[in-house]
Image (tube, rainbow, N blue to C red; front, side, top):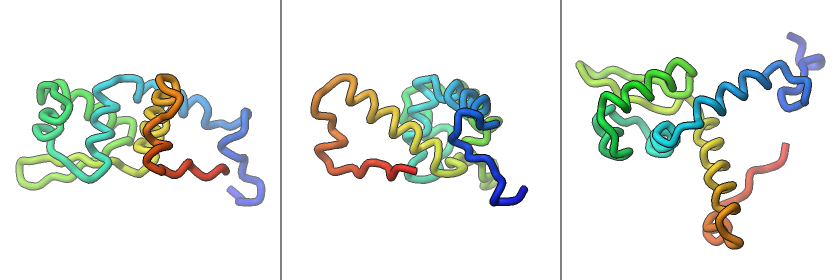
Length: 123
């Protein structure tokens, strides 16, 4: 597709709107949000993730399988162990923005403003 004629992905007519809704639906689960937050700093095994999110390894595996199908997480195998990581920074940014929005809903002085967390650049 020619870059000069490529449709902006952020317009109301974007062909990506339905896929974006699917991403939001995939992230509409507290365990999955916690998994994404845990994976921000690098890859982790299922057992380590299970400890962090306080769920069984089986439950975390099922959530990871869904996130993997949605291409939100990727894997690396080391012998018999599988390590998960975020495929790119977008899911982490979406979750962070949702957390920031939740802070605004609960307080007039959200923590992310106090810590100097920069606001995302407008596009």
